[in-house]
Length: 305
Image 1 (cartoon, rainbow, N blue to C red):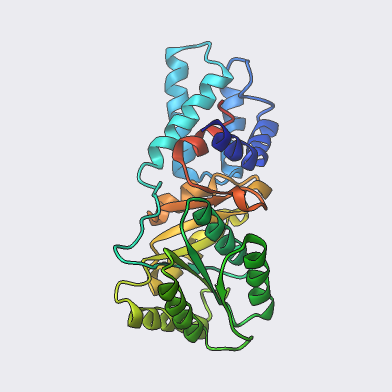
Image 2: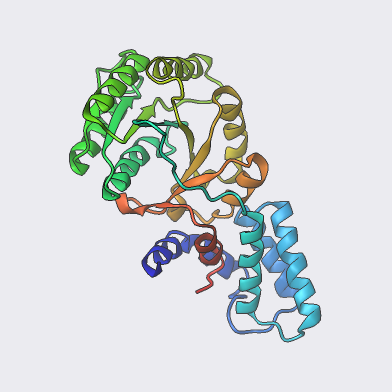
């Protein structure tokens, strides 16, 4: 558990540093006053926690200050973590397998969200857990995406079904399901073309992939996850809303959190969409894709040990 918390702590280091810098180390040992609360409010907005969550955190801190005039920074950080944990109740979800394999996970997102690398890292993570995994390179819209996933598959020793650039993505998904079934794979991870939610032709391609998968298994895909670039902050909410309406998302993976000071965006996305968060991308290595854990997240972003 300690090692897992360290991943979260390291992954949110920029968010913690940004809050600490703006508040001049409010989470240190000094007592809290009106001025420090104002700077904390500004810092929480900058970290993208949003209006509702920021107001809840500040309200609880102010109530605590009334009870204890000598309230110190680490106590304030603990209050912030407690509020976050309460707000995020229900957002943590474990990956559940289908009753009959393979369990199909379709990865969706815009270009640059980290979707292809996340597909490979998820495959590696499941492999470490003793599961057998097949990758499907269904981003045939972009040659680099197919090559990128094939490169990751080779590096991580994962089987993959791929075709040439411009191939029918749904046909690749169909073939990949057949191959995964024949091999008795536990999971099939389908990497789809990066798309803007305003591109109707690519959105239709997603629908076609779904229809083809359902020809093999009427319950497929079992999971449809949007991969969101965490550095975009709450700007990703509208993107997620449109994808959810058109494809029926079942969850989120939030990536690139190690490279941003806007780690609070996770809270806004959850409050707005109520889509469970399955994994977080906290670094570049395969093991840096970690299952979302509310307690670890809440403590990490407030620097609570």
